[in-house]
Image 1 (cartoon, rainbow, N blue to C red):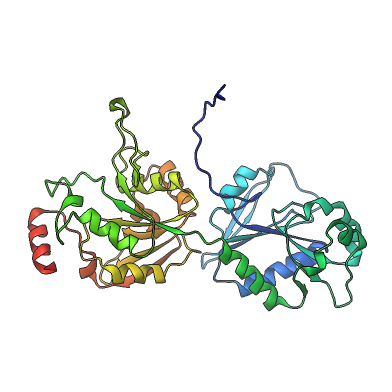
Image 2 (image 1 turned 45 degrees about the vertical axis):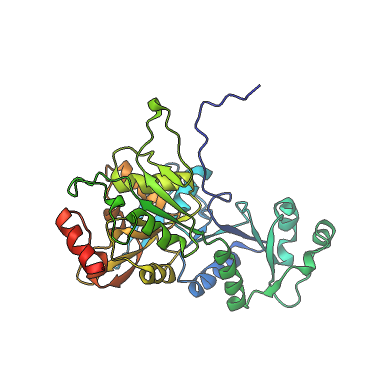
Length: 373
């Protein structure tokens, strides 16, 4: 008998316990853990990092006022209270490339074990949590492996080991762990527009001997990107089904914003290289340039004309962390992808304006085709 499910089975972003990519540090006192995290974070300042810890205050009032303190240069410090909730924490930590966890208080999906004789009892208490140790740190050169560790994990001495003062080596190891989880990139060709000013489907215009949507798809596929067409919503009353290689719009009447969100709904664990069909001057060199300058630690990597004020949202690589940002803007009543880019941490690549000319009218089409040929 088929099991009944009343909720749509959606693809989910790959998460650890509290974040897309996390590691718990345990085995020594909280001061040593915090100090190590802050030293390592200085070496990895190119990444978005967070530290998840418990308050060590003796008296914390329930429902305490949440404090948001902004430095005049824009840095933010948050002090808040509330219960641990993995769903809320995953939202809070969605923008971060890596989250360090104080393993003395919370269990992380991956672990760094510090060997500190003063905390032997604490390690024994959390022995079952040490199921994915990435590396070991000795508090000093004399630190020993506890007998119960070797009994439980006979191969533990084969795991990479550092001393706590080898901050550069530890930082480099963590950098590699971050790099391992950088999302792959897929292509998304936007073909579901209304083309009102053109009077015909812009994605079918012929600049180079075939429909432009095919040219754009080939541009992305030539860079080894699995590429999909973003198409109009299915007409379920007619019995329409999604064709292979297409992503039908699930966010109705939101234009390109809905197409991008629909791609993330299909695969929230990939970065999407979004490319419109009305910018025929975009070529293979520019596609490669944008991929080369991709910064996965940002919300997106976008192109901007040198004489333009704002980036082009439809010539952009959106990282997986962009999905939650897009939905937050939608919740506030905004469906403009450019507004998201302008107000987010985005890598900008400036190029000549001529390459990103939008072709929207029959007159512009004739002129553009003449230039391209």
